[in-house]
Amino acid sequence: MIEPLVTIDSTRPVPPYAQIRDQIADLVEAGGLAEGARLPSVRQLAGDLGLAAGTVARAYQELESGGYVTTRRGGGTRVARQPVAAPGRRSALIERHAREYVDSVRRLGADRAEAVAAVLTAFDASPH
Image 1 (cartoon, rainbow, N blue to C red):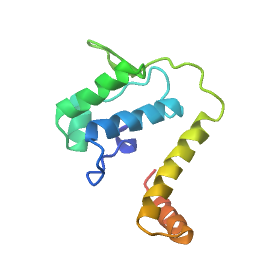
Image 2 (tube, rainbow, N blue to C red):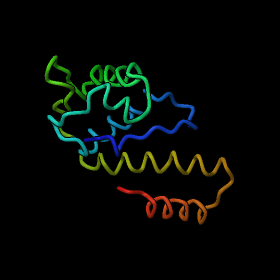
Image 3 (cartoon, rainbow, N blue to C red):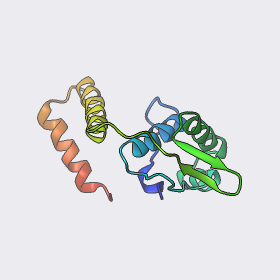
Image 4 (cartoon, helix red, strand yellow):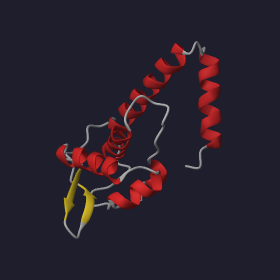
């Protein structure tokens, strides 16, 4: 299941449906969700995240349009077959997120030591 891996940050300017879409797409691209893996139902994920069902439905629709998932009536939403990932795709995703983090903490005036300390603290506190 993906529930513990998908989180919503209400302080971000990114709408919740886009956060869901982006996180699931990253998981699929990085191999964290294998072909055929079943995603939670719209209602289940919405309830788990405290969101309206329409928000999750929009994320799933965009994931389907992007070729990340397929939805069949009675069969649920499943991860679609993906093209063979380029070597290093997972590393590239991690680096992209690291750059986004660095950009964010620099805007806050943090130096390298503060940024690294915050990452280590977050890793130690994370249940994953």
